[in-house]
Amino acid sequence: MKSKIICLLAAFCCLGYICNGQLLKKLKQKTDKVLDQKKSESVGSSDVAGYKTTASPAQKTNEPTVAAAPPSNGTVVFNLGADENLLYDESKILTKNNKLVYSFVVQNKKQEYFLIEDGNRSGPFKAAPIKSLSEQSDDGSSGSYDYEVSLGDKKDPVAIQHSKTIDGKLFIVFNGKNFGPYDFVSKMIVSTDKKQFFALVTVGSESPMMAKMGMGYSFMVNEAALKRNVGDGGMLMPVKFSASTGFKHCMATVMNQKTQKIITVTSANKQEEGNLTDIYAGGDEIKSFVNDNGDIISIPAQSPTQVLVNGKEAASFSVPIKSMDRLFLTPDISKSVYYEKGKIYKADGTEESLGGVLFPKVVTVGNETAVYYFKLYKNESGAKHIYLCKKVI
Image (cartoon, rainbow, N blue to C red; front, side, top):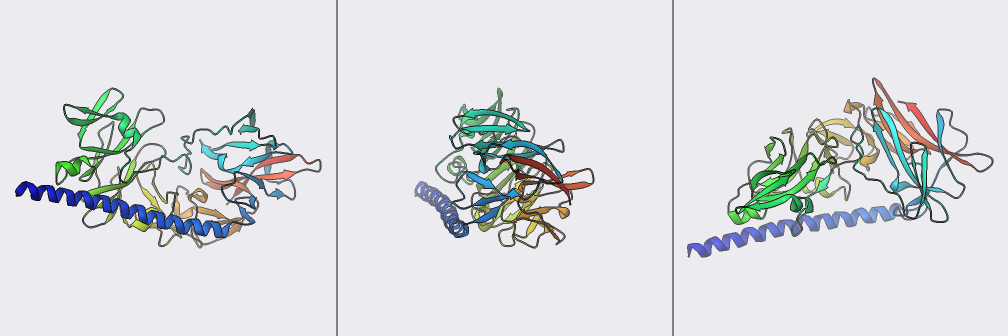
């Protein structure tokens, strides 16, 4: 009788895990459906970061807004052919050592592709020369290491690659060394130089079966001495896991199986409580991340005008933050800015017009914060010049 009760309890727990996973998936599907509907309603002729779009946002080639005159605050950095357009989705702007680094992919009417990096052109290519997105920006606004933990049947392929059973126990094998033992490895992230890793693991649970399914006591570990407990010590289900752009800290979001509470913790032991809406309201876009200081930076779904640091307001804007790509965080987050529809919104409540620009990027050098951006000017002969411009804000 005792063994039957144990089996029944184990089955019930497994069923609860599957139901929670299905609940999260259904919520995400519903949220995505609403977001897709809103996106489809907004499709038309609009100015999106300096581009005039007249088709679906999935269309990759767009015609930039043309400046009426050569920008007085800019210099020509490259030229476009008469039949060439930029591929908006494949272009990238980063800051390295307080300098702007850029790469653009252009396409002509012959379906040929060219890569332009810091003014140097290469090509033509038969396919778009998309570069690795692992390159990191100084301010953490690009090249993020964010990943979402799979719910349910699929296990992380990186964790599988580095997992090994030794004498009946599970270890992470990394650069010839064994780390563990663990009951389950939910997620593993490896740095671009292959010298570091962060992993979210399960060690212990209410039953051995639940531990081997990844339900139990969660820890963040790495190749050094990190072994940080996640959450309140209860039965936890992993939801999200990520690392900072400089690969100095990691962040885990878990759900307590019994209380249904959502908890986010970083390797610096910074913590924030949330809800399922915060996890999925952003659709495919991550609305929270960990920076290299180990702080949780997040945009709450129920009040998207705020920027929170470890759950406390650090900046507030007069408009909702719809895209993290257009939110520029300064060292003093209370002085951060947000760009949308030709305007720069400051956290102090003021705003400035900045229409018809391409890829605005806010950079703080010393005590000066400036927005760098590109503009297209077409001269009388039809030549298209791309200008790099700067405006101190």
